[in-house]
Amino acid sequence: MPNRYLIANWKMNLPPEGMDAFLGAMEDADVAVAPPYVYLKDVVTSAPKNVLVGAQNCADQKSGAFTGEVSADMLRDCGARFVIVGHSERRNVYGESDALIARKLALAIDAGLMPVLCIGENQAQRDGGYATAFCSDQLRAAAVPQLANASEVVIAYEPVWAIGTGRNATGEMVAEIAAAIRDALGRFWPADLARRAPVLYGGSVTPDNVDDLLARGEIDGFLVGGASLDSKKFLALAGAMKTRFATQ
Ligand code: 13P
View 1 (cartoon, helix red, strand yellow):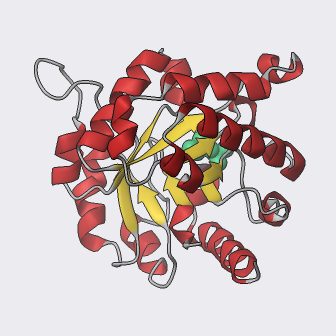
View 2: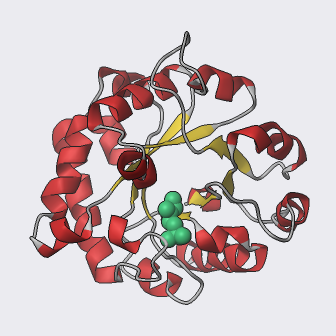
């Protein structure tokens, strides 16, 4: 399992130590980084070869009069290799619907980018016992015809209540949802893609909880916010993954 499923989502931040210092520290780590749009080309240029570079978002339209938007084709032309779609901050802060996210997913595939599709329940849905059903519904809503042409789609399970809160899901919760995700993929997505889709976890991942999250062997990596702004913490996550996957 490559460590490139350790993805830094910098959101609307840059590492305080500086972008070049952060990227320089990744020389021997198999990781991925999603900077804000305007830094994409700089990161593509200065990142070590082993670092996969991608974007945090893309437009739900191919081109045209959509002020402020950036298309999946443009991201590919800037050197992006993957794009995050459906992050809960896009869904909840900017009101993105399942239908809009499905269009982004389709356009990312058409552009030849590897989509990283985020799903995850909020606190009320978890408290109500609907977490697995909600995640399955989000996957069903994303079952676009273009999936048949995708070589790889990554699923990132990011429960809304765990993002940026310091309250991570337990290894046990993640294992339960990962099983539900694989079941839903098997029902709604093309069989071959469903079998191969890596499942990541995101939500307050730190060097202190990474071993517990990896212990059950149900997930293939992480999408990381806060801890991805500090090269030492991010390298510690990469090290934990390397150890875990080397011993499988
Ligand atoms: P935190 O790691 O800061 O909780 O953010 C997770 C996330 O949203 C990554 O996409």
